[in-house]
Image 1: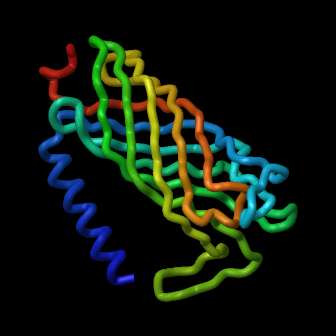
Image 2: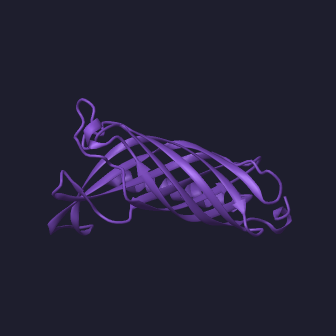
Length: 202
């Protein structure tokens, strides 16, 4: 726990320093769906349960420094609980931290390419609460390291408000609770760009 707190502090410090130097900061909220191997297509050493299906919500933010390069992070979670094995309520959540390249195509359009790492967290809900010094929860999490690749197209409705159709690929290590090590997410986000006034016309 102490190591996680130190890591979180370092990440916040880096984000704070980079935000102060950022040429552009973007924040977005979106809706999407996840596609993954079905229960019938479960591979060896995997459970016959898909992590996909349903509506996912997402929130993201990025900091662009120079030459449209930067970094950012996002989280996507299933809007409602699903049933694992037909009886156990669960909710998959994808967290990722990425390097970003975001070239512009004139004033009203641009692309976004991401690559990074993260965690797939599956929360399995229980009928009782478990309490510790950090608080009380009614779920147990199963977390797995993952790689992430993403791409999107930013279309600016105004100088600062954009719509972003997007696609994401997650490669999850040791994802034995589900049918396979791969999941793809397709969706659309609505975002807002915070950038210096002199950059609004590029």
